[in-house]
Amino acid sequence: MAKVTIGIVGSRFQADCIAASVKAMPEEAEVTAVASPTTGNAEAFARRHGIPKFFCDYREMLRDPTIEMISITVPNRLHAQVTIDAARAGKHVVCEKPLCVTLEEADAMIDACSKAGVLLLYAEELFFAPKYVKAKQMADEGAFGRVHLVKHSEKHSGPHSSWFWDVEQSGGGALMDLGCHGIAFCWWFLGKQKVKSVYAQLSTQVNSGRTQGDDEAITIIEFENGAIGVVENSWNRLGGMDDSIEVFGDKGQTYADMLMGNALPTYSEVGFGYAVEKAATTTGWTYPVYEEHWNYGFPQEMRHFARCVRGKEEPISDGETGRVVQEVLFAAYASAGLGRKIMLPFRPKGIAKPIDLWKMPELAQAAI
Ligand SMILES: NC(=O)c1ccc[n+]([C@@H]2O[C@H](COP(=O)([O-])OP(=O)(O)OC[C@H]3O[C@@H](n4cnc5c(N)ncnc54)[C@H](O)[C@@H]3O)[C@@H](O)[C@H]2O)c1
Image (cartoon, rainbow, N blue to C red):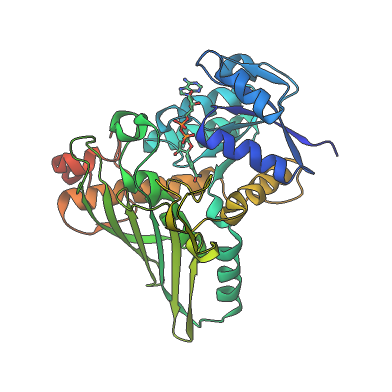
């Protein structure tokens, strides 16, 4: 069967990651087009990655009949519109995290893809991160007995683009940006059980001059069988990205540190090119990672999605996954606003963005 042809919307951070990841496992898919609005960006991106077609307007790219799947790497507030446009054009969709901003958007995206008969694939790469996949395999074999606690932590020194800091465009702060990974991870690790309740403690410790968003977040998720997920996020962790898990059961436990745990403890007085995402320096003691995309699972994720398009595999992360995460995000912001645990299902209507439930607790109260 021919390779699945992909058009990327967006041409910066995550677009680079997707293009490089598809190239790293090239047997199932290829990126054949890119669209990005800033003059010259799509062309420069296409040249850098050896992509034949480039467009300023993604809608023009959607009219190209040779493209089968769209990878959406644009700010959160645009995910829903691009997904719906792509579905209407008959393209399968890979949407970056978080799925969208509002719960209504999540419904509309799932509905549009279902009506168009295309796949909506939610890009949660932690489901493919080799170390975390190994931890889950061991858990599923019973290595830890009954797992009662799963922890995921993702922290860095703050986002690279201004739109993340603008809650009108992002929908929230560190919880929305990084916590979506941890919520998805705990849910997946514990077998995609129903979420029973959510409690979150949010604060803006360092960046209140720069954002309305939370820059520190701790979220506790209670699952149907009583197991607990704990998700820790920060935009104030200096020294480069940190991503790790801990898993505890009545017969054992495991720990996995995706980045520092796979790094080369290094000392250099003069520095070198690159250590790890968001590290400000490469001098002194640093922890350079190798095969960074591979360790996260991005190439494996895109291979899986391409195989889903060809009917060779069933999606393990889809629009429903993104909607589960979105509901927990809303519940977490409401919990922080009200200072109490929120029971699920929690489907408040007409809330413009999750963070409003933290900033305006009266909205959260009305939604319960
Ligand atoms: N899975 C992950 O670990 C991961 C990592 C980083 C980012 N992301 C997600 O990917 C998405 C993009 O983040 P990023 O870091 O690449 O942001 P970025 O700021 O680096 O890039 C955003 C891109 O969107 C483009 N864009 C803006 N408006 C557009 C429009 N109207 N039409 C088409 N393109 C438009 C910009 O030109 C730019 O190329 C976000 O949703 C983010 O949460 C996921």
